Length: 410
Ligand code: F6P
Image 1 (cartoon, helix red, strand yellow):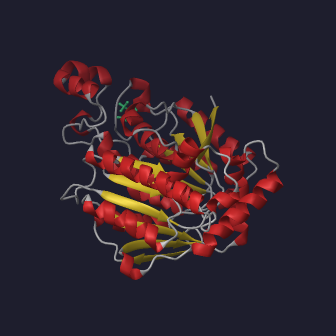
Image 2 (spheres, rainbow, N blue to C red):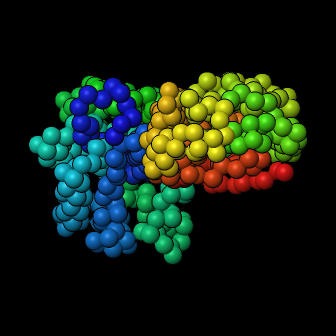
Image 3 (cartoon, rainbow, N blue to C red):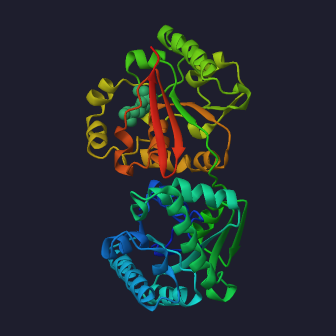
């Protein structure tokens, strides 16, 4: 892992989720996992529910979860321990951040887990999701739980009743995380309020900040590469050229496309880079735009302004090195894709925080990195993701990812 300069020692962090069913734990675990993977940390989630379904079958009635049911309790303990052992094995092979996703609602269970984890040299942070917001819980049950294999083929209302009974079993034994249990981040009502207790170190602190900005409000994000520039026409990298005639036409069509979307345009945030080609593309929209330096194209350093052919013939070693390892290759006195990912982190946090639709007009390398985050694509794919000119990419977050729509305009 190379991303965060502030790292002085190896990261071995266990995030232990805590909370009643339908409080968005898995959702939060997945968001954290996506964020950390995008930043380059070896991150993996161990979902105890999946272990239960695999080992004991999916159709367990709510009585199985009753803390008074000795057999059920023992079976649940066994699957929890199996997931824990797998997680410890994964850390032994070089894992960096393990997310242990289960209810972990009792102090006993948490202390059992934390002791084992700490004995393996892991830093443990509990991430507790708390909510009494009935609408949120109901939405969560209907949107995610009813689609679980546990309720496949069952009448939805009967499934909701069963799931609510399951929640009641957990409620009867639930003990919120106490200060003497160690570090914790408590997220209330999906980020309305966040409490952090003894959260130390660079990465755990970043996670507090990230958790503070999460929300589940539906909205779209548009990723648009600037219209064709005069440099694109010549196949030159970098620079600060204006738009070609075709690029200007695209800018006009983009404005019509956005008008035809039927959304309140005053509500849309438009972000561009500081470079001419993105500003000229956004201008016909007639909306207030915000310029981000962080959205500027990958800095090609000494190669800025050259064509790909010129780089190949005049700097063959550079050309070969880039072909060999495009993700980590850094242009002489310029940037690598990993550098781009790192400088985009504040953009990602702002994107997570923002509840309004966001239209981002930027550049190929930058949009590849943003797209990889939103679509949860592996870091190694980033430099090759297709982000064509004159194509509007609309991403709409759904339960555990984003729905994608691409429209080629001209
Ligand atoms: O060619 C247009 C461009 O935006 C260049 O300015 C930039 O260097 C390049 O795309 C990034 O794409 P790649 O990493 O594939 O060269």
